Image (cartoon, rainbow, N blue to C red; front, side, top):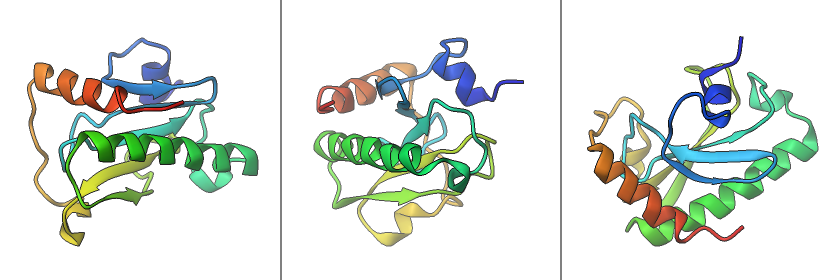
Length: 132
């Protein structure tokens, strides 16, 4: 059975897409801990990030770098934090989170709520800064 992320990639579930290429997909987290919180995933369905082959893993990190640089231009912050936990969805993924301080990368922080219009605007702002 496909993961929720595979269903997002296939367009079965809507998302606030940032960017994609033939191997990777980036979209806003719908339960963000900070404005601009983005997930970057490989299109290949693999549960654990360290199960990815070296080429896919390195490509994922490079795609995350491009995504992070776009977020940094679109969302004022000191830097972009990166986290790999992978416990909540059995599909390898990277969290990119705009940071003002170290406490911003705490997943126990309250989740933020944005309207669909705000999410679309955030996604468009990041997308407009993404360079493939």
